[in-house]
Image 1 (cartoon, rainbow, N blue to C red):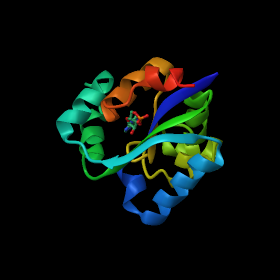
Image 2 (spheres, rainbow, N blue to C red):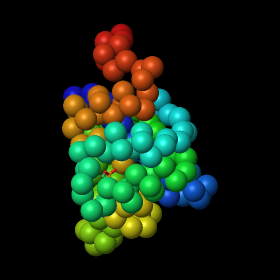
Image 3 (cartoon, rainbow, N blue to C red):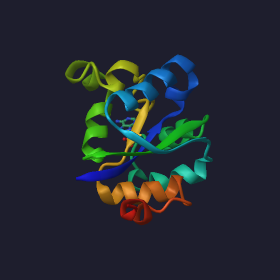
Image 4 (cartoon, helix red, strand yellow):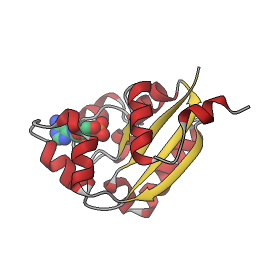
Length: 148
Ligand code: CMP
């Protein structure tokens, strides 16, 4: 079914203009429609809320430090089964796993480390709704889904 998902190009993917361009092109090449797109920067405290499910994990502090280190680009993407297709395109979280199992994936090609892994994607439709609300509070998933 048609779904929306929240995708983020993290600060490592935004830092180099050619990498950013390649990642953006991958979105278009994989049949996603870009519903919303914006570049923005968040403070540490914002990411502490966004990543609250990881609070206490050994990588939590480095994750919020990294994510708040520079601008990122957030997308609302639409596609048939957008959530799972975007996650498949990203590849596994861990970069070495990505390189070995999914070398053509975004993280396999551009990921630097397990933290600086280029992209984020919602892991379920419920997460997508919540995360779209974080990044695009002005956007209504319901209204978009019901448009004719
Ligand atoms: P993401 O899928 O956006 O959501 C959680 C993030 O935590 C993940 O991407 C990585 O950036 C980071 N992360 C997950 N696992 C590790 C790990 N083992 N070491 C460091 N960072 C991690």
